[in-house]
Structures are given as structure tokens and as C-alpha cells.
Image (tube, rainbow, N blue to C red):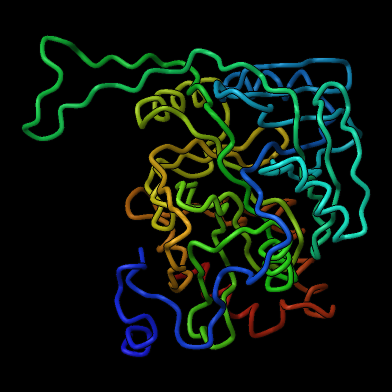
Length: 380
């Protein structure tokens, strides 16, 4: 800590008890190509669009487009849909789209990468450029897409906090109904080339790191997870728009969708449980990002999160640093489940186990020492 204090002079620019040591990753690129404004939507492929829509509406999405081969799911905020589902033979995550701050940024990014900008389908509108990150994940940066009008939002409850009385002669009776989704908040991805992929996002999209995590006893080897936000200068943005973690496979981990408040989240969870859907982990409050969370599995096994009350940072805050532990994922709430950690016996955990063997043979960042660190995280 002394080393850190000497480096920064004061702790006024930190949100964490611990900042970078001298020579550690700065958490941002010196000269990014562009700075994206926000995450726009995620794309999935699923064989059964009817089942996907049934769960989505129980989860709190509204349907903005439904054809034989395509399903668009939206929140109440104006803008693009949150999720686009395409009909296909098997379930898979297809990629993420980010909104450019200016249309000219799409052209600048295309020119810098040698990619071609193109008109997007009429169902979305606008233009975009398609890229692939070092982990193989598809990334699309878009501009001038059709803007869906806002929908009526769920009204947050009024709270009497301690002795501060703002509600009198009125009861609290939140309905057991879907927790109306307002917007897409973030996506979490796992990468076998974590550091290379992290630097790619910082350089190409102008994202900046809010928090770094490192494996127990391995700080000197560098971080293994980062929570990354958009850089809108003095305008605060979500603590993370994308989070990235080192692992034995390149895969989607989860995505998160904002709801009005904790009662909307909890009552909506009761409804999902009544309908027979599987809660993966929750309800609790995270440490990095501070969100109140509740995680669910959709019928295709994808992990999705309701969240509310997340941290918002502007560009001035420096990255926090912390040790990665399973118990350090939440301030309060039940312990992280085996399902959430991907350790429940079944096809997914067997796939992850097999991929560990493959990853140790391949030329990537997931080596035997990192495997030991990951095992320590799961039991800590």
C-alpha cells in the first residue's frame, strides 16, 4: 500500500482500498482508435424461438420484432433492442454490438482495422463494422440504428429509510409480476487469451478498466479478470459494460439487465420460480460494481442476471485491484453456487474440464500455474 500511495500521492482518485502497484496495467489505452458510447445488444442463436420468447417475457423483456427466424427483445428504455435471437440448429452466443459515439467512428474503426463498414438489415437500420476479438468473439460497432420509443417503466417503490419518513398511510405490496427490464447493462466473457483480448478492447473501443482481479498468490503474474466501462469523459457510465476473465475456453459467461429496484427484482424472481425456471444464484449484492443481483438459467442454459443499483463512474477513477475469490463475489447473500461457478456435474462442467486439458496443451495464457490459481479461487 505504501508503494501505491507514493505512486498516486492521494487516494482521492480511487474507489477501492487497493490500487495499482508501480508498473502494473494502467487499465486504459494511451491512444484508442475510438471510444464507444455504450453496449447496444447481444445476439444468440436458438432452435426454439417460441420457448425463448416465453422465458424472455417472464424474465421481463418486451418483444419488438417476431418473425419465423428472428426474435428481438427490448427493455423499456428508448433505443435498440437488448437481445436479438436468430433461429438455428443449436444454441450458441453469437456476439455483441456496441454503439459508436459518432457515425464517423464506424468509418474510422473500419479504416484502422481493414474491415468494411456496411448497411445493417432494415430490421435494425443504420450502419456497422464487424470485427473479431483475439478470443474469436464477434464484435459489431454500429451507428444510426432505428430508435425504438420508450415504453412505460416499472415505478420504483418509495422507501422509509430509518427515521426518514416519506411514505405514510400507504402500504407496500409489490406485485408478483415480471421484473420489467429497462436496458442491457453488461456481458461477461471468458478468454484463453485474457491479456491480449483485454488490450484489444481498450485499444479498439476505448474502454477503460474499473477493477482488476488476480488469482490468489499470483498478483505478480498480472490480473486475470477485469471489469471494463465505457469512457464518456465526465459523464458517469456503468461500472462495467463488459467483464472479461481468464479461463480454459473462449465462451459467454452471462449477461445482465437492469430493473427498477430490489422489490421488482425479488418479486420478479418469485414469479420465475413459480413458473419452474432455475435460479442459479441470488439474491445478493456484488462487491465490484455494487449491484444487487439475481441470476437465472434460461431454457437453453444461458445465464442471465437481473440487477439494480449499480455503481456509475466517470473517466477520472483509477482501477481498483483485489484478489479473486468465490467468497469475494458478494457483500451479502447466499454463497456462490456450483451452478454459477460452472461446477455443477453435467455437460457444461464436463466440457469445461475437457477444455482445461486442451488449454494446457495449447499456446495461450491458461497454463498449469493459472489452473492451480483458478482451483484456489473456486474453493476460497
